[in-house]
Length: 277
Image (cartoon, rainbow, N blue to C red; front, side, top):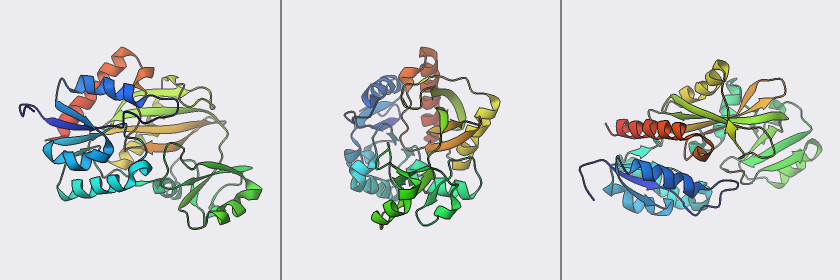
């Protein structure tokens, strides 16, 4: 491997069966472009801990929910921190990278998020006919269950000992995602049909929309990295945060234009280079 250029270990589970998406296609496209700027190799997340020392940085991309390889992920984080290994995104993310506790914290701090509490604090939630119950460490809808209000307490009692989050089920008009490199907005996509989350189309955000999304990127305070801010448009027209994905956000680049894809790759390339200085 040539040392004339920075070396990148690109982490992806190319075979991960994502619902409604093809992770491998996105990573094939990204690596085909990034290789023009870096000496790059691709590895499965379970192999990253054994290989990363030979590379200048580790770029974690579509590696799937860490629940599928929890022990390997914990070993990767521990060794990366011990060795001061550069990781992109940095391992200091406060969003999904650290679990779902941030939704509880942001609720308590008054941010515009779907109201979220732990199972012991249901009195802090607004009344609703139905609630979402999900594991705090979940991802990609893993373990998500919708429960009628009258069944909520008995359902939680049956899950005693599990680390759970509870939210009122929101009747929203559509979901919208905002994509950032570092603190810079790149593009937005939305799902007009709430039942078809990954059938995304172009979305032209207003200034108010961008300020909504940017506040969570500022709150997360990552020096470098790719982030996706997922929100829902409520019936009264407001936006509420659904998720701040800062570990391995799927980017839906296939739903954008060639120009947007090129600009995104350029921004990501510059960001990775900057993170190495």
